[in-house]
Amino acid sequence: MLLRLQSLDFAVAEAPTRLPFRFGQTTLRSGVILTARLLVESASGAQRFGFASDLCVPKWFEKNPAKSAREDVFALIASAREAGAAFLAEGSALGTAFDHWQRAYRARVECAPFEAPDRLVRGFGVALVERALIDATCRLGQVSFGEALEEELLGWQPEELYPELRGRSLASLLRKRPLERLAVRHTIGMLDPLRERDIAEAERIDDGLPQSLEAQIAHEGLRYFKVKIRGDVEADVARLRAIGELLLERGVHDARITLDGNEQIEDLAIPLALLRELEHGEAGRLLLRGLLWLEQPLPRALSFDPEALRELRSLSEQVPVILDEADLGLAAFPRALELGYRGISMKCCKGVFRSLLHRALCEVHPGAFLAGEDLTNLPVLALQQDCAVAAALGLEHVERNGHHYFRGLDHLPLAEARDALHAHPDLYEPLGEGAALRIRNGALAVASLQRVGFGYDVAIRFEERTPLASFTPQLL
Image 1 (cartoon, helix red, strand yellow):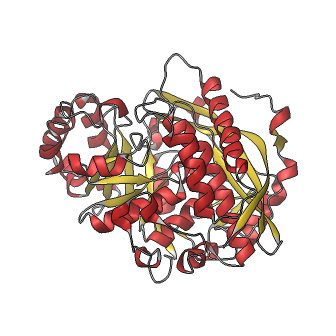
Image 2 (cartoon, rainbow, N blue to C red):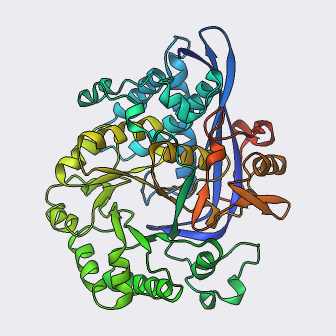
Image 3 (tube, rainbow, N blue to C red):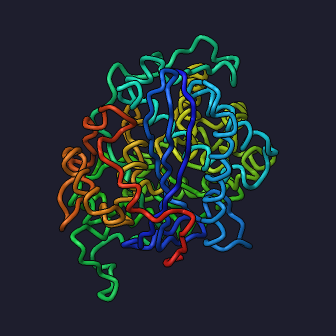
């Protein structure tokens, strides 16, 4: 489908976390949520708005200790504005969604040196506008996201970026039907209480949602878990064993585990030592039996350094190692596969087309895989669009943590939250006056995402958010 890009607006909302979220060296206590609204016109003159949203997470896209969290958030907002300008610069010319995205991605990301520290920041803005563009395309075509992929509505031309993908159709990468159920891989942050008794009375939250891992397992029937580690073998092993003991007590003998280093480990001998220590004791062995992969142990600056990767082959014999923060551009995944990495994260904040391209690269590299990860996706837009991509690509389990660190849909206008509950009753359930994510038997039901548009059937109340031009953060 050929399109022109007409206009782009941004709006903002803020929300406090219900729990502090510790990952890497960062503790998140509030969030700035940026929403994009893109007006697109077809060759016949029909117009539709497309929407996308993301949490502006500090200290993940760029980890510069000299910058404050506030500076990081405003850098992400600036990235969205600059990406919008790149999309609109040639937006009046007819092109497919893939054409418009590719031009903007090259102009904003690939123009910078591969090692540039702000590459992920640059990509954030492009990915946000890209999702709004895909949404508008689906609405113009009166199709769901999965149908847009099957019908090649987005103008997929992978060989323009990776010649080895010539002839790879989108249909060949997809399930015959998108998944209707996604298992939740629950994030266990470094500050998260494991048991009810670990919660000090002054820190107990009575907001209708579980707080401890123990309560989360009982309430949601979880089987998949993602554990944050810090690269301190003694501390990491102690926490992992405590998690394993809890899983044994709760009867979760078939637990599946991933570990996330968040760039905190500079020597791959450290995770090797950690795995050796876990061999001692039933709790550790339970985790090892279910261990699926280790995510981003090394800092991004060392992730392609042959000297830093001396132990990668040995480590990969015990657990596949995947990229996340070091996914810095088009060259990243092919380079990683050559060096011995086995997979790469799928996060819509890094781009939908990039995830589709990575899925295609997995087809030509046997054993390579995509891992569904989460950068605190919040409903409706960010969560549901990410789930729609995962369902289309057949990722049977995905990390989800936004529902744990933020309370339900409280960050949305109340009417929008209620609309989401009405339109997607498989995905949400009532919580107070609003709604919350509905997790049963450890999974999300996502069949209702397969409707016209990119993963959602809710009227986005854009005007009830704060216009970006008048935004002054109150919680940062």
